[in-house]
Amino acid sequence: VWLKPFWLKRVVRSAKHRISFCTSAIPSRTMPRRAFVGGNWKSNGSVDSAKALCAALSSGSGAYRNKVEVVICPIAPHINLVSKLLRKSPIKVASQNVSASAEGAFTGEVSAGQLKDSRIEWTLIGH
Image (cartoon, rainbow, N blue to C red; front, side, top):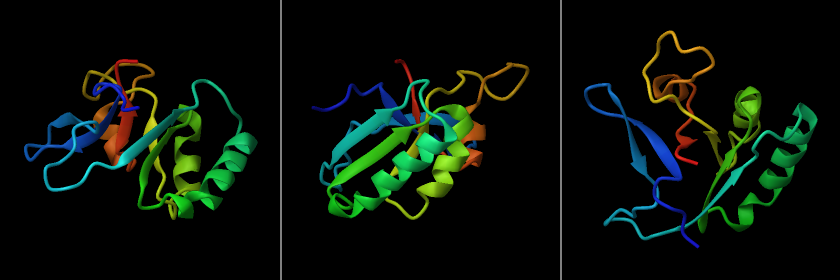
């Protein structure tokens, strides 16, 4: 089952350094379509459970390394931890939200530029 095109989007920086989004659901004409799996952790988990889940996901990633693109969306406080735990894995880490505004006086919001600066390439949008 393919995801709706607006569900999960890749954060990209344009040549003019403006932030834009491109959908992962539209295959490139030069690359064959690859299966995609995304997992949203919602508001669940602790540091210990994040470590355990990352270990389990990493240990099985060899079986699907070149066959399936896997992206997981941990809760915001665990993004850096999960990114470090999965850095040698083919699994990508996404944020669960991104601000529609650029950086500024928006308490609690995270801009696309801040995600990109933290090496987060994916985010949930419109869910």
